[in-house]
Image (cartoon, rainbow, N blue to C red):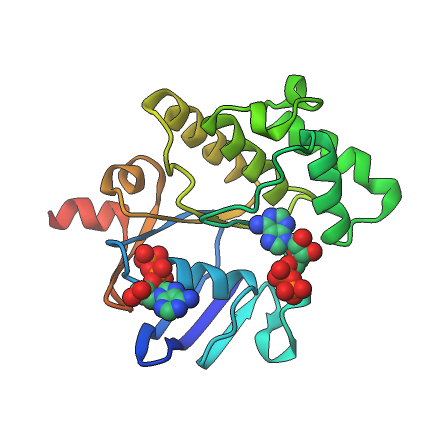
Length: 222
Ligand code: ADP
Ligand code: ADP
């Protein structure tokens, strides 16, 4: 599903991601854990096809990045750290718009939108304007756009960001449901989130992967 080898990204003199290698083969939830500035978002953007690596190789869902990012963007779902906001759009129209951007055919689009609304329990909000929604609901809209077309790989950047405990619990349950039919990579700076959700954790520190371990192994060694 994912094979990253010596993945590196520099911004000017800053090496945000430094020769990171890992493989993901199975479904499940994998956590990318680290402090602010560790390089998580940069990894997530490269995995999602929105940022080119400076060096290294990356194959995601059979697509080699050397062949361009567009195909990769369409085969996976991505919840960015700061999703673009379209405050005056209705939820369903926004999802239809993203489905169009993702290249989902016109005749499949309304079903894709309906499925995404159902999965995120936003059915009753379809005709609400996005700016009338709570932070938790907005974040669910972000997840809904990521799952349009049922991608087998979901890249969720800080899905719990800014949510209160109740909204966060709801988000975790949603992610667990989604993981039954997709591989989920989620980034977070909160250890408890990884403990609650993930089977495997990659701990990032200063642009490198400091630890790659199964949660069961991690618990045993602590
Ligand atoms: P995290 O998601 O773990 O907080 P980031 O990937 O956002 O980490 O950032 C990693 C490093 O790269 C940080 O030092 C950050 O300041 C730097 N960085 C991230 N994006 C940019 C950018 N667009 N331009 C310059 N530096 C950046
Ligand atoms: P470009 O290659 O033209 O710079 P972008 O990377 O900005 O394109 O985005 C590609 C397409 O995916 C755009 O049509 C945009 O609307 C859509 N898109 C980008 N980011 C998101 C997002 N976070 N949520 C929904 N759609 C997005």
